[in-house]
Image: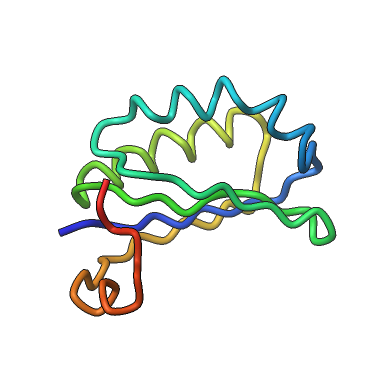
Length: 102
């Protein structure tokens, strides 16, 4: 069953186009993570938050990525990381056009 990982944390920027420029290498490397089907990058400059919503093929893949990503963020001095693992209800999501295929 596909697993969604939501991760959000305090972030001072960059945002928008500057974030694209700064984070493109990281975004490309995330494609190589085991079990990753897709990621939606999130940002809220006004609230000073960023993160993402990920879809992994399995819960084990999502858990492994979450551990690695949380450690990476903490190593950069980020505190206040919120991470949630959720199972996707694929049948109901399909009714509403949810992009659950890789």
